[in-house]
Structure formats: C-alpha cells, structure tokens
Length: 139
Length: 139
Length: 139
Image (cartoon, rainbow over all chains, first blue to last red; front, side):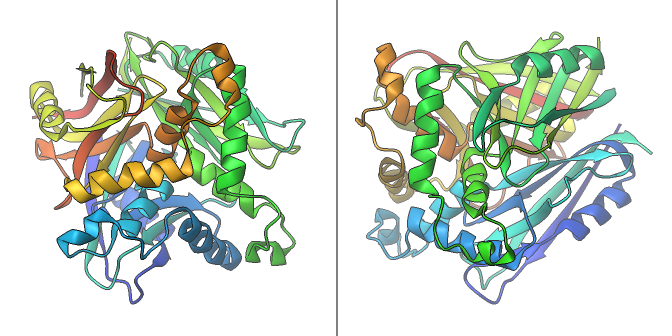
C-alpha cells in the first residue's frame, strides 16, 4: 500500500477564479506510483473549493452567476464585524464543495468523458494551498 | 489490501429522476471481499449526482422543488449558446453533490437507520455511468 | 494497513447547532495509529451534516441565516404529510454536506490554518451519531 502527498499553490489575479487542475492531479498520481486507489484533492482554505465539472467557458460564466444569487456578496454578514469581508466566499465554497475524491484505475484518473477537476477561488489575490493525497495499491 | 472497481449504468425515462442504489452498492462491496474500509460512489457525468438521504416519497418530491428554486431551468445561461440546454442540471448536481464515501464495517455498508444511497439524474433519457470503488482490508 | 472505526454521539440542546469536533477527530486518529492516510467523518442521520470551516462566531451566525434563505423551514413540504416536520433540515444538510475526508500526514490531521471540523445539527434535541473511520499506513 502506498500513500503519497503533495500540495498545489495558487495566487489568482482576480478575487474569484476557476482554475483547471486535472493535469496537475494526474501528474501527482503518476509520481505516487499508485495503480488502483483514490486521490483526495482538498482546498486548505475556507474561502476556496475544489469541484469536478465541464471545461466549457459558458459553464465557467454561469456558475459564478448562480452562486452570486445563492450567496450574495456585500450583505451585512456578522462575520464582517471582525474586519473580514469574505462571508459570501465561505458560503460559496460550501455550496460548491471543498474537496473531491477521484478514483485511480490502472494508474490513471478514472474520470467520465467531460469531467475535469477545478480549483475554485472565492477570495483570491493571495497565496492558497490544496492538498493532494493518493492512496492505493502500487503499480 | 484490496481495491475493487465496478460501474453502474443508468438510462432514466424522465429528464430528472432519483434512483435508489443501496442494494447495488452493497452487492459490489460483497463481491470485492472488503471487510473494513470505504466505498466511493461517484457520478461520471456532469449532470448527475450521488447522494445519501431518506427513502421517502415526500422527500423525493420536495427535493426537486427545492433544487428548482435554487437552480432554475430555462434561464439564459451562456452555456446554452453551445447548443446545450442543461446548465441548470450542472448547478443542481453541484448542490446535491456528485459523490459519497460509504464506510464499510464488518463486510457491510455502515449506514445510519434512514440512510439510503441515491443516483440523481438531472439530464437523463440517455446512458450515464457511476463508478463504484471499494478499498480496504480483506475479509 | 490499518482501518480504525469509532462513533461520536450528539444530543444538542437546540434544534439547530454547530459543534466543533476537530479535537475529537484528532484523538480518534491518534488511537487508530495511522501515520499516513485519510479519515472519513460522516453524519449517520439525514438531518445532520459534517463540514469544514472557520471557528469564528460571526460565521457561525451567518451560515444558518444563509441556509434559511436557501432551504426555508415551515413551507408546505410533502414530506410533512408523514407527520415529520424536518424537510428543511434535509435540504440544509444536503447543501452543507454530510461528510468530509480529512487527510492524515505524519500522524496528525493535515488541516489548513483556519480549518476546523464541525458537526451540523438541523433537527436536534435527540441522539444522533457520526461515524469516524481512519484508513492508512501504520505509525
């Protein structure tokens, strides 16, 4: 049995950004030498998430719109009395999810035809981290 | 250590449908011969999900209503400029979740009293797939 | 390879309550003797959840407000014809998520700077259970 751990760093230019990370995760799985198992991809900050979806520019446009309706920025959140202004980011990342488990089959990510892994930043422009932990049977 | 993989196929009659799959998952766990571990149940399409909830017809009626409010069909989603009409399905499956991990204890699914595993179809009437991967210590 | 299982019990005073459980999970990981791996923390009832977020009183105030907007109590849910009154609790726990996987690195929970694990009760004042299953390589 093998457990292999790595971390990805992000520092997005915009406050809210979706970054495709499928290839980076595939590389870490290869480095870990796991043939059959699972890889956990999990955001380590409370205003960012990880999700699986389509890599299509319209979808990337629609999601922030949908999320803004569900968890609007600029409301009088009590969290903001601490000097923070990111309560909406915490709600958004909770709705999107902060982690995924991707199955590893025969040494590769076992994703469906349109599935891509994304990092979701909701309060960016500073350094953030994602943990990637692969676990399974060796190649 | 054992890792066992299987796939379930779906082709629902309606566009939106919830299908109970607890028994199918229990069978795959038994086939895998895992005594202690976890099973990942994950939708492989971006317009379907997997969730754990009550097997009660009222709940199955209320959830689509609640989801329709949160992620309405028929809006002017930019994703639809590609010719697709399923942007709401992508939002719905994101809110519901696309995967669960079910614990396996003493060779069986370790579920609470009312917990059932469901496949959630949001853009059906065509073939869709769910991956089931069991990982753990042998019986 | 080690798999170690434990259960946490809750009986909250209020109908809706968020309980920090990071220390309890860390203790179970230590008892399990896992050095590298993952721990699954999963609510076993359909009206409670588990999530990772900030331990900040404003956030703990804002989240129920945000959830109430998304999944209001007191609507005419069909589920209530069974005599239950907790359909909103099921929607709330679905939005918040009912489980997390926390990575274990070098024998400890590998959490980001502000990450804390919470039990989310949406229909409390009675006994509820959370399963905690650690899996990985021995210390």
